[in-house]
Image (cartoon, rainbow, N blue to C red; front, top):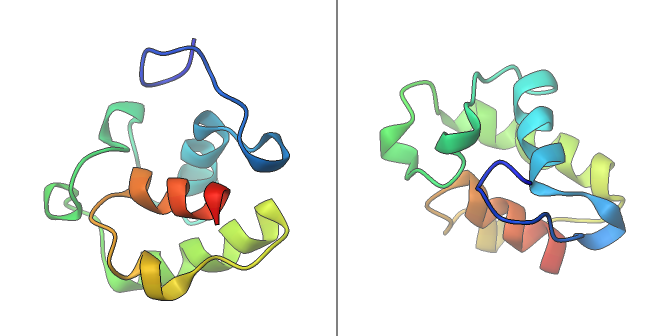
Length: 88
């Protein structure tokens, strides 16, 4: 079972939502509880633009392709960024 209570669905290259939450915690150093992944950025007390920059960089390395930064800037949650990254 995945962090959002559903069966894990394979993402591009097998990069799951669970992998993404670990990446946020371990690679960019932002404390993120699994339940917070779908929260609006305004609800994340530690979120700032530096985390966004770090996230795009490590996310591209993790999935092996570019992330659509223009669309990422329109996202309102980390889950939206994850979905953009794995679907293109």
